[in-house]
Image (cartoon, rainbow, N blue to C red):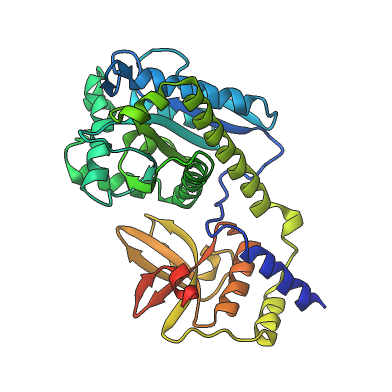
Length: 370
């Protein structure tokens, strides 16, 4: 009976989001602290086009997001600015860190020398292409307006690609949560507002690097696009964008509570996991190896059980300057689902299944679709 209950639980977990959440602050009884950052401000107006000023539009949208969240007693909202003032990039993250915030959300507008349009949301990471790098460089160059930028950023040069590499490593612990929030934002923009979806991307934004919690930077649209610029400057557009962002933040909190709720995680023992594996029908994918990713870190740990809450069968790969830690290794997808359940029960609520073919990581969705 216990095995059947466990299998039902596994199926339930399987329909949850692919990206669960690492344990930043799992006390959902306390207010969920969100720091909202209106990009630019004061002597840094951001992007300009035909009388439209990024810092003003970003501030308006940000205040509307905050007003919506503040109606919910589960949330506490902190702003990096509430008026047209200049705030150093390092201070924006410091505000979030001092508050021990659960989320940091930075809101901006985009620009281009074409009629490009659409919304995109960035998480901290290595630039995937030249375009992402250029967006990050333009946002990061604001540090040169700061009086003590050489001291504050210890020689960081936004024009040097190597300066961006260290940023991803420092926030790798929260990358999965950041991607999840970014995905929720983009889904709302695309599905509810029918905006062009420019997807979730990674780039080296200093403002994201400065905070130690899940963080995203939202480019709400292009001021340089005639139609979209007018939308961004309109009350209707700002209200719709703010509503979509606020709903994404609320969904994120709900998913976090679900993924870490004790009521959704009955106590499971190693013996019960092994019994369930033995009694579960196999689902083999030839040539594919499934593993449960537990964590990604710049720290190299011994793969001993005492470093991983008693879990055995731990392996470690170095990927793009980070150490990825995996639990289990099997071509049986049903078995790896059970192992993922056990990993979450042991204290890794963000663990998820990854797939490898010929030693190379491949998209799990592609494997399951075959």
